[in-house]
Image (cartoon, rainbow, N blue to C red; front, side, top):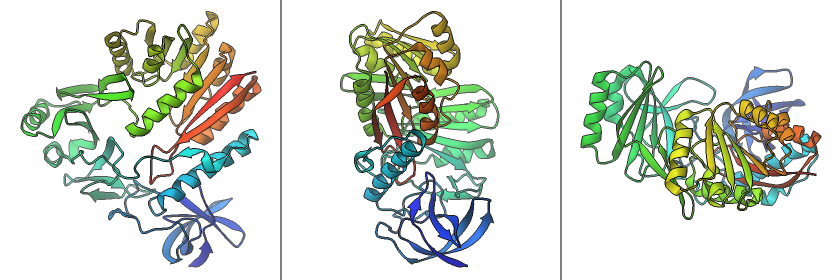
Length: 416
């Protein structure tokens, strides 16, 4: 056993301290905590410690309000007061931009706090246990932690105990999505849905007033029972209707602010040519088309592209087109075709878009607006744009994920 003081947080679940000159990372801690730890893993540059007890709590530390913590690995920062979480996220993002780009940001005003730190997630995805219970894994392990409710989920979401019990071991995960007509349940099965499982889902939809629809997915097969579509408001006067099992931002209130920020940064007007990569169901494409922009949205998910097309037609946005293909293939094709967008909007997955940045730079768009949920990969990708003549005009972050280390960042880069 050893004692150390936590001095900072990582972009991850760990607080950081030093022991005999070596960095030690300890989960379930916060800055200022004096803790007793057991070192359980030694790496070349750091060690992993297991928290044994908090000897003295730091100024921003608290007892996690959720009764399933610290075993549940879902909320890795809940032991820190929310205002401090926002401040720490700003410091982490600012530090990454300083190290990677030599850019100084105002950490204190960088992250816009969420309206609520609990009850904000419009969708949650849970593991299922052999006994039909649902829950999450412990941090850094496959040890199952059953729960009865989730504090960060919107209150209307209810765990589908009957469905999980009837599906049994064939169901590995359950996702719940809040909709305007009730919740939609997505069950991820080990193989294609069986007739008996579809019949079971039908009975639940017909008898449960809380559940509007159920989607059974397995081995590339997607079976829909009931109404599995949801309506999302992107901005005042603009809504998207999409299947619940498509990717959508979990924090709908913060997404309204994100969409507004992206539209402001892109500076779109009537006839502006816009390329939206990783467009999904049109989170940014549809608001851009609403402003009269000529939008080309690209995504590999054919279901999402089909939803974007339907919504563009429904809204009368004739200047929007959507392509189901890999973003890199599209961008290379458009470069050869001498396509010259005024703005490129890009919202890639957590791994970023390193293979796309050279191609995007060759399009020579006046503006690139990059949305990211992983600021280390964001800064890595922005270095390529820097090398090709772009400069950062604005950085804004939004806390989409209170009580976790995650944060959403949007950057406007201008070609000089």
